[in-house]
Length: 553
Image (cartoon, rainbow, N blue to C red; front, side, top):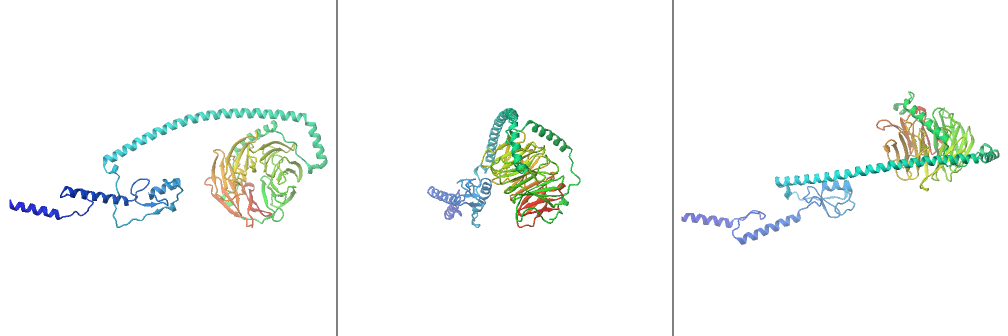
């Protein structure tokens, strides 16, 4: 018994002398109740101090594996805050603008082995099951709300579609009644004032001859006879397009890629800009509009054949009127003197002076001797060549938004007018009613346009680049970039599209990947203004800031 008592005493003495290795241990065998309370208090203080020094993410609330700090002093997990910046571009706490470059990584002491804390909910299997159950409940509730909102959206969409259909039918009926009323008023006015108009016309023409030809007063409606011609022409063109095949003489991509710059052909006075180029493909004729106020004609051999002194301060546009004469003898010009003039074999046969500011663009109608003009006074006019009259005047809703260009669809059923603000307006050529408006970009982003022969694609170019619009979907089919493009044109087959930018002209293939075919350098000190294709894409014609016409063949 004495030996056992001595062993117990020695064991107790050794336990009293032994100290714990780590003060942060939770389970320490205290000798007395007083010592136990003091040691537990020290452990809690040590843990609190470590938690104060621990970095916690402001989003997840956990210790970040790759901590970063923002200028506002908030600490985040690097991967989380980078995703937030890419999505919103702001600090999720302060809602201030934040970029990736402003994030400062926090370097931790590698020697201190900090253990990443584990969330309490994820520390055991029951906790994980509870978390999954909560996530499932939340997902089901969100799915229920989504289905509920989808059902409400379907009902609202159906109601809006019904209202839209009813409104369209009402508008169509009112437009038809308005057109019939205008036609009746126009016919009555023509019948009552026919004698006076004829007498006045004869007097003006006798006094000035062909050089002083003028336009009759504008009417408010297009006569029914012209509307019938437009309808019949549209049906014929639609039938021909379905049977139309690609010409065997059309140049291939490889052949266009071998084109080189030919000798420049002078067309206007020295250092005079060429504002527009138009090509009559069937005859191989070319007409250019120059800043010197002249319109120059070039023959099939790309040699200057004649020049027309238009009388404009600046001749801004010149186009062949194919409906009036397929031989290229009738040309319409416009300029900075607020007038539009029609020329036949070099002689002025009609002058239209209804515009109040510069007339910037003209376009020929395929149905007959009709054409349209667009002006900086925010209006476009529909003209008849045979009667030398303006049949209709349309104005933009915003009188300060000037028109920059105009073109007519190959079928002749509607036309496109570009504005200075970058808007593209599609008008019904028969009723002269604005059908649709879409934006090509900001200011001066729409300066030139061209319809593809297939009637589906529509090219618009300006200071923000060149875009190809798909008229079937009202979406951008392709965007060629942000370089300034003052001129754009499709070839007659619709297989290629070209635009000029700076001192170069680029040709792209329309089908497939919109791949580039060739880039042509005009080797001039001044930039290009306009571009056109020759017959069967046998050449590319470019007009620029100098007086020379450049041809790549």
